[in-house]
Length: 380
Image (cartoon, rainbow, N blue to C red):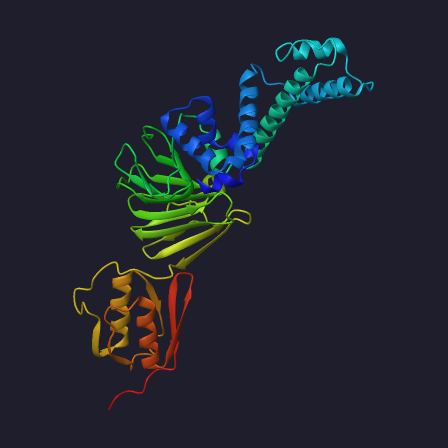
């Protein structure tokens, strides 16, 4: 609710939840917006203006062209200022027949109505232009959909679970929304997200699940992952918990697929990996999450207690347990053994202990952990 406190009249008029309250109110929208006005009485005038814009648009049966809008505005200026103009009166009457009665003389309430209506028309053209210029945003993608979509908005302060008809689900964080078909297509499952959502997808190799979020597509078959695509943020984040996903810019959908069957330039993410996408530059990068979670308890040495264990075996245990890749020079480190109780320490703390013990260092590059060191003296 808090983000509405900074909205302008135009932003209210463009907001789906606000439009629903104005155009087809129900108990939920009525309670929400009445409560909002109690908390933010200073927004009353702004909201009244937004309602006026929407009401004005509702009265327009045929949207005028931009040229017609400019001529009508010139006519209003001529009537209010008394200055000569280039508009033919009969043409103005024809264009205005669907909008307001012919003005015999300046009438302030009629002029006010005309100004409000033209403001609404200007906003309408601005909105259409905005959507056409930003077809990859949530609003742009939803407006271009050729099928009817169901929209769920989380206007509460708590996470909201939305379940899809085929068994998948998404947990929406506050101030987030998702649009989707009531019934998915036979060949794929398309979902549009704005904000942050954690998805759990039912496995179906024949119907890939596609999440569209601010210029980025996340394609999965069956897995769990989080997508964060805030409207005003400058990047999209995808974090994988289980399974595997492919991420790529929407623009790549029209490009040829690679040997993996994904669009060229797609990144494959596995558990404990995350991708960052910058829509302004189309830059897509991959990293490990800040705190990799244990995804599989090792069959042997479940407590991570090592006694004179070859470091190659230690690294293998960590790779399996955390789903990560550890790169190192096996020949250089072949004489290194580890004796240490690593226990329930986080992954990077485990690596700190290992590297301190064998005299090595590590860094994370493109979701891989690279260990370097001079090696160890062989024990006699």
